Length: 385
Ligand SMILES: NC(=O)C1=CN([C@@H]2O[C@H](COP(=O)(O)OP(=O)(O)OC[C@H]3O[C@@H](n4cnc5c(N)ncnc54)[C@H](OP(=O)(O)O)[C@@H]3O)[C@@H](O)[C@H]2O)C=CC1
Ligand SMILES: N[C@@H](CCC(=O)N[C@@H](CSC=O)C(=O)NCC(=O)O)C(=O)O
Ligand SMILES: [Zn+2]
Ligand SMILES: [Zn+2]
Image (cartoon, rainbow, N blue to C red; front, side):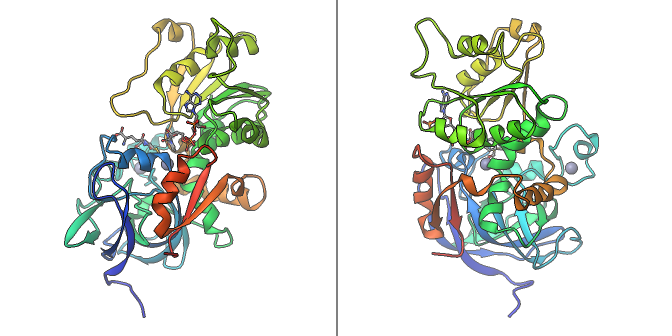
């Protein structure tokens, strides 16, 4: 029996308040309005940014909310005026929308899109209302995705169709972590990606950092130094093509800083460094490890609310550049299908990132998994309770 136009009742993991475990609830998901898409979510990854918001530290976080933004599924129905996807399409939800019409999209300078960002940050759909209800209360949407629900509603500009040949328990990870790190290396760094022969340092070898390494390898970097406080990440980094590893908690001599060690290892500093930790002190080290005159440091990590970065302005006066990116600078609707093709053609590693799996009922365990040192990504099967 068709569910089109009807409210669907399904299970979702709800965050009722800050710093609380998620609660599996029956939620009502209203049909999509004009320019909206209702998706049956098959798989979702769990990202540190979900944990950050659930902790209550995200200035944009509010409750009750359905988190999750790294999801893949199948379009169940579409609202009036939707032309980019149709029922039955395999899709990935996009927390960085792409409308192709706004000032940002038309600029050719950024992947940030202005179409739905303001309402997305308030946890509602573009018309200012929610599609989720539980126990008579409206629930907020998260990052325009809310992939911790078996059914979700997103704006049409926040979804991309991909080939149905790609396994959704893998493509979900292209909704955030892998794309973010890879894109930072092949799109954001420099003038359209790391140049062949460049030297690179990656701070933090989680899903995002390993993806930067993957992008640096693809673009022909000559040296890729991984910096991580967890020695177990050395093997992971090598597996993705990193050439050197430094543990700043253990490997530094007296009087040495991580930046001075890296400068010594690279004849004056790196061409590119990437912060994939979210630690503002690491961000400073990453900038100061850059080569005078041209070294560029890209901030990817999300720092805790209230944190600020600092350095001596002289670092910038002498030519080092600080920049950052969301979703790696990738335009989701235009570029994600190509990344999926790369994965299908064996040119992009995705399977390798999956270290843990959980059913929807185990979603709180997925967060515990995430915080264990041996987890790169945990994929949650949304159809298994
Ligand atoms: N800008 C964007 O669009 C996006 C940003 N993010 C953000 O990127 C960051 C990284 O995400 P993810 O890869 O999933 O995170 P992980 O926690 O999996 O990886 C971070 C790694 O950095 C290590 N680390 C912690 N402190 C230091 C330090 N002082 N020096 C060196 N290494 C350190 C951690 O070690 P240990 O485990 O021992 O702590 C861990 O191995 C997060 O802040 C996340 O919120 C994620 C996706 C998109
Ligand atoms: N809402 C927070 C900032 C959180 C943040 O930086 N989000 C990243 C994506 S992290 C993904 O896992 C992002 O895309 N930022 C750009 C954006 O437009 O949201 C705050 O208010 O500080
Ligand atoms: Zn994320
Ligand atoms: Zn736009």
